Length: 499
Image 1 (cartoon, rainbow, N blue to C red):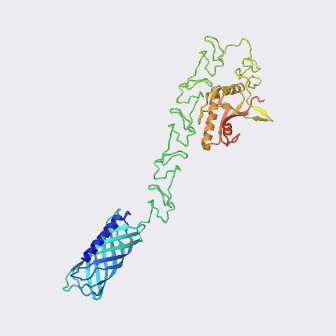
Image 2: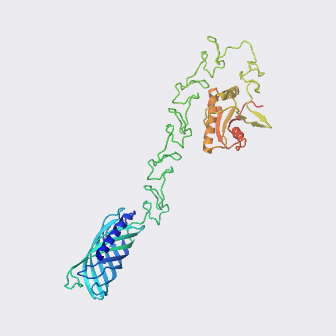
């Protein structure tokens, strides 16, 4: 019963090892050599051989002709006891086995083998035997090129020299071994990028990414998505992309996000190469949405971009300097009735017939032609004009309604002095990303320019710049300071009256 108990124990150990291993099997490749050491136990045929089951040890050397077939030489030694006499018998096995291997799976790599063994007995007996072995085993990876092998074997001795009548014998056995694969085979490549670990300078490359000769992933279009994973490999520089590497266009104006200077363009508007909407007639309604694209410069328009004429005198609102002309009255090209009596309607000290800005607000300093003084010279330096009271919607470039009276006076003064050229500069506080503040400050300056153009100021007389947070006039560390830094300034570039 003792040999049977040993066999059951060995088979149970083999099953437990197979089920407990979660690693993929290690298998050899063409040209590889397998070196190993092992422990074994053999349950001898009690009647024919008469030896007790004992544990022995040995070593092996295998060579893989292909991934499927290998030839293995082995030698092992066991010291056992003759059951009849109790004397020690030394058993040495030397032989070779031809193996066939299955592909590795998570359950291991099964193999079968047929081999020949020469058995040498010493000690209480001094003789030899020949036997044929049938082997069934499983190979489990231990990481790298190491593997655990567990196998069972059936030994057939056609004529055992230990039996009284030279009869045949069947022995059963099992072995557990540790082996190492050397030479040949594919290099170890943990991230499966085709570059061996020893040469891979980027060992954690995502699966599928293209790599260079040192194993580092490539990004030919510089969008942050590696070649091989990038579904849009020719993305323009600077464009934002999604997880697949394809550029996004949130406002659907055909200019990609990241390159789009005006990312909130209304649907349907025509844009330039920077993604900013065009407004050819400068009426505040973008091309593509403007139903009246040839509106005279300065005319007030409706939401469709068509000019309005509130008093129906034939002069469009915005160009009509007398927008409340009674119906049927004759007006001049400015929409006003010819003056009969000269007045100083706005009380600025300049008579109406000489006042180029007849609607100046009370208390505003004016020049000789009745227009608001925009620029003041102090010690030979022309001071920029901060447009206080000009406000914008939160985080947008759209002017608020309370800004219009101030800009109307600026427009009137610029119209009165046609030789004046100005710079409109947008400024922000230091809160937020600089790139965002630079873009928003430029857009706000452009909104002021567009408004002044609608009031009749020639756009060629106005330049716009976005300074962002770069030119503060107060401390960005306080709310009051930040409020002062969020501003639009006018600078005199050439011409014009100064005081």
